[in-house]
Image 1 (cartoon, protein in one colour):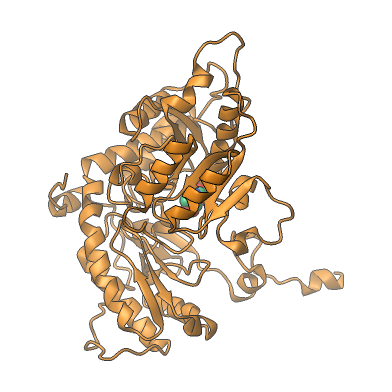
Image 2 (spheres, rainbow, N blue to C red):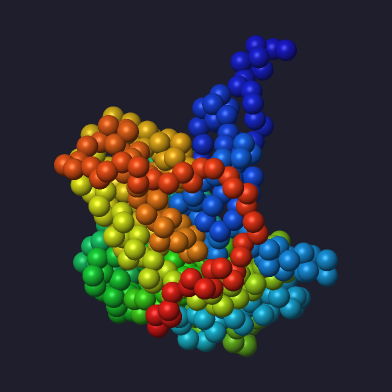
Length: 462
Ligand SMILES: Cc1ncc(COP(=O)(O)O)c(C=O)c1O
């Protein structure tokens, strides 16, 4: 064996996304084996509350047999087939109909992808091609925001408002301009100055960049500015879509009427990869209306409109509908906000951003961050049976499955509080200890019991 090979860390052959592989290979992996509702169990039998819904996706919770059955049914009929040209499968057609009926814009059409980054790439190409079809090929600049996360393909990396995600990847797309995340006036000024802007890409609630809900009036103002200047408004709802923002789409919550809506994650609750680009009639028209020359958009993926993924999406949306999970988020967002805001009393906590949608961040002071507190809190949470992660900024992500119970939210807040205290944070008066029940004992996961949940679901809230 040569010396380079002898020095190589051992233990895993899996190159993990967003990982320091030298550290992972030397400290080992946490191997998650199964899940049920808002809970997970690792290979050693330890139980965890899933405080992040995987990567913001497992909205209907883990262990849903009906999604596995939908996949098995479709796979044993026809796993998938090309959707290029005039080919289609029934689950893809059904899903397209369904998404257009749900879409917060008029006369929608759906382009299916394999995930959020595909959806972002598709939209960047689509808006530029749209303007070329309109005879304005010079409109190519995409405007993005500070803190933005638009996935990891090259287009999305170019749009990254998280600087660390751009660094070290060479020359990215030069036709990108950035504005501050909460300053509608900055976008208005930019659009006054430039006639080469194709589209504004906007996460209604910024997710991976730190969980920032829009300041009052911000989204309405930027939407109106785009309208005034004829710039396409692209709502990136890869996280917000399908209920997480407390409405089916954040675009519904803030009446955004987007030109293009990007989704993924919650469309299947992560049971199988799928993304959807929902396009308004206005943007679709040049591609769909017969003209003197045929317009063929040379774009698409092998797994665009994958039949099994579409079948799972349809079954997942059935669950969201039947169990009124969007209305449930509307209620839970307040419970989560109330439980987490108490953590702001800690000296190490700079801000708790919570209460709008079922997503939140507990952020730390610069001193706490440079003293390494965020990773100690995360480790403390893992020891207490709560699994989540720190975002690029160091803030703690909280975005549980929609089936989380109020008691779980209390457990989660208590676990963060205890982990903060253990990590050296202090606050004026700590609550009595012993609040935290032992959730780390695996009492055996039963299959997810819909009846139990249905008895507990909240009343419908509009
Ligand atoms: C707003 C947003 N857009 C795009 C993406 C990329 O999605 P994916 O990781 O499925 O490619 C993400 C992923 O977290 C996201 O949060």
